[in-house]
Amino acid sequence: MAIDYPLIGQRIAACRREKHITQEQLAEHLDVSTAFISKIERGRTQISLERLVQICHYLDTTPARILEGTDRASSIYLLPEMSRLLEQCPRESLPLIKSMIEDVIRLYPKAP
Image (cartoon, rainbow, N blue to C red; front, side, top):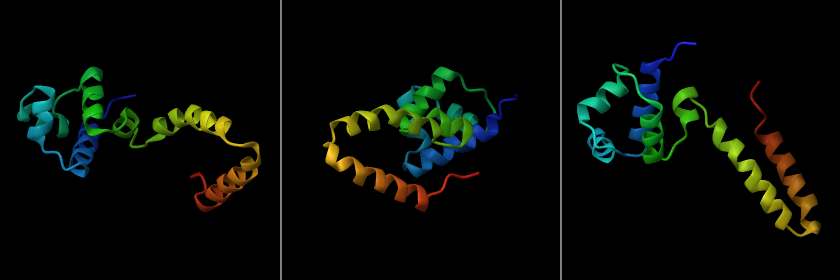
């Protein structure tokens, strides 16, 4: 599988703009030049995994969103937290919670 650096760069740029962060601010945080950020966003340079993680951390996003265009990974990490919360709920509230989950599933069906 080939890595689509231009697409990765577009996603980084889109996420950066959503957060109202300039290329200059991102560059300063990463201690790189603005020109380097521009090259990343235009797909003109390859981005290391370490740099990708730094960017994701600063932009408060996930590598899955940048690499795949989804937030799939973030939902996977929520499962243990949801289990922990359910264990703390009173037993009599569990049928209500189950019903609420079923309603959410009906309102937001899983994409094919």
